[in-house]
Structure formats: structure tokens, C-alpha cells
Length: 355
Ligand SMILES: Nc1nc2c(ncn2[C@@H]2O[C@H](COP(=O)(O)OP(=O)(O)OP(=O)(O)O)[C@@H](O)[C@H]2O)c(=O)[nH]1
Ligand SMILES: [Mg+2]
Image 1 (cartoon, rainbow, N blue to C red):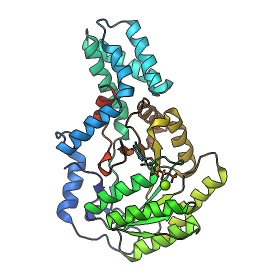
Image 2 (cartoon, rainbow, N blue to C red; image 1 turned 60 degrees about the vertical axis):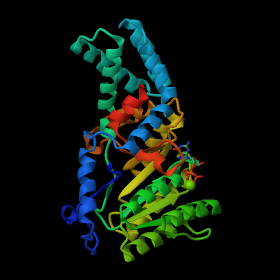
Image 3 (cartoon, helix red, strand yellow; image 1 turned 180 degrees about the horizontal axis):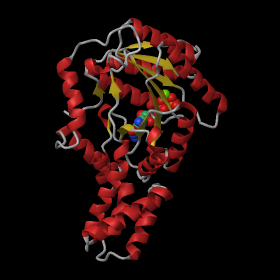
Image 4 (tube, rainbow, N blue to C red; image 1 turned 90 degrees about the vertical axis):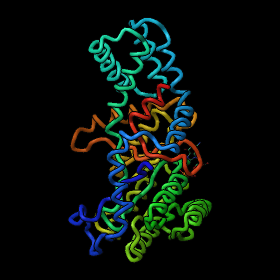
């Protein structure tokens, strides 16, 4: 089985845990094997479930891929091919900067390998794309603090609550004690939606009718500490980065979490809808400027023509310099079912995008 997240072995994080509670010394066998497979999974052949998911990812991204793949159906490698490729990458929302970088890198690879067939150029593009996307590939790390507090943000309808539900199931299945915070107090339906996921996964939930989202989150983190939870996940209401007062509310939730537990939240995730293309990059930049993002979940990559946006996100990450580094893509979603949310792998994604 591939690793859905990385659980830190207890010994490694003793100096990091800022709270009095020691990190529980339990599940050594599954936790250690999970950590190991997180590091080694790239080389191993995919398990059957992963392979079938990859097939569906490729199918989902076919709208993006078909236009790029058709560039390589001819017989000659010439300037026209590169021009067509440039247009196809831009259409797939790869963005101007990443497209230019990819073309320069690709031409270098073609020269170096003395490729003569367009099909070989396609394989070289997959290599170039993989290298560009690689820095985004990082497992979500659980266990450096108890609880690990994860705050989930994003615009309306991006897939926050659904992704939390799926993530909760994977964590619960790995013997993590999870507590959910219904900090989307804006809509009653939002609380109920999260409560359904809590019920399905048999995890606890802290919610409050019409309460202040920061107060709900404070209560949840406090309860999570008292109850010895491994993970607390806070769902928040959807908002646009241009809604200043709502962004201030998010910052308040973030500060309040820090008051309930020093050093928290450990993860500030942005959920982005892959269909929004270049707008997804704009969202990443804005939410990062406001909150300092630690990771992304990219949803709805089933049936989008805009899968290239991950290349744009990677290119922007490289621009941020080594001190900040890229914002990793922890998970990608290709549908509404539980198994549709999986870890991001640069090589797999590049292959799927060009299939
Ligand atoms: N096709 C597809 N649909 C998805 C995916 N992820 C979520 N959805 C659907 O997107 C819709 C919105 O999902 P939610 O999880 O409610 O989104 P949200 O960000 O919590 O929305 P708000 O709380 O209203 O801001 C639902 O119908 C989900 O089933 C995905 O990967 N693929
Ligand atoms: Mg929601």
C-alpha cells in the first residue's frame, strides 16, 4: 500500500513537540512502515488501487493532454512543433513563465539526446515536466506535535469539506485519533455536511450553532489536546481573497489556534479547484500572502482542460526562493468518492497530463 501521509516516528520529533504531553509511543509497526514507504514509494510499482486511480487521473486530464499529445503526432521536429507545443501548454493553463522554461529545457534535452522522432520529444517533455513538478511532491507529515493541527481554507465550493472528509477517513484508518472543528459557522448546512463525514468516519466533531469560527476552533484544539488526539482539522467557510474582512477572520482563526496550542496550526492548507486554471495560481498567491500556506489540495482534476496549472504553481514556488520554497501539493482529487483523493506524484502527474 502506498503512503497517504507520513507519520513521524516518535523518537525523531521529541525536540519539536512544544507541549507537555509526550508524543505517544504507539503504533510503531504501521507508523514506521508508513514513513518508510513515503520515502520509497516513488520507485515501487503502483498497487492495483493506485494503478486504477492513475488510469482515471489520465482519463480526467485527457482534455488537457489531448491537445498537448497531438503536437507529437507528426513526423518532424521543427520550429512549428515547438510553436504548437507552446500554444498547447498555454491553453492548458501552464502560464507564460512555466511554458517558456519548459520549452528551453525541452530544446536542451532534445539537443543532448539527439532525438529525431516527435515521440521521443514527448518523452523528454514528460521528463522536463516531472523535474519542474518534483518540488511540489511531499507527504503530509503527522505527529511532530500532538495534536497536529490542520487548518483548511479556500474559495467557495473548492472542495474543502469533502477533502477533509476523505482525509479523515485515511487518517482514521491509520489509527490516528482525529477531531474535526466545524469552523464554517456561516452556513448550518456546512456544519451538517462535516458532521456527516464525522459520523461516517466515527470521529469526534466540535461545532457550535452560529458561533464565532475562531472560538469554535479554539474549543476544538483545546479539546483535541485534552483528549489526546493525533490530528485536529478545522474546516472553514469559503471566501474570496478579495473579501478583506473574511480574510481577516481567517487570520483571527489562525491566531486563535496558536493561542490554544503553541506552534499551531502546523498546516495551513488551501484547497483549489483545478478547473479554475490560472485563477488557481492567483488564489494560491493571495491566500499565501495572507496566511503563509504550508500545502495545497487540488481537486476536480477529473475532466479539466487546465491541468497545466500545477506547472505554473511549481514555477511560482521556485520563484519564491530557497528560504520559502514551493507550497507542496499534498493531495489531488479526481472525483467525489473517498478513494478519489490521493497523494501527488510528479512523475505520475506528468505522464497523465501528456497521455
Ligand atoms: N468532480 C469532483 N467534484 C468534487 C471533488 N471534490 C469535491 N467535489 C464536489 O464539489 C462540491 C463542493 O464540495 P465541498 O466540499 O462542499 O466544497 P467546500 O469548499 O467545502 O464548499 P463551501 O464550504 O461551500 O465553500 C461538492 O459537490 C463535492 O462533491 C473532485 O475532486 N471532483
Ligand atoms: Mg465546506
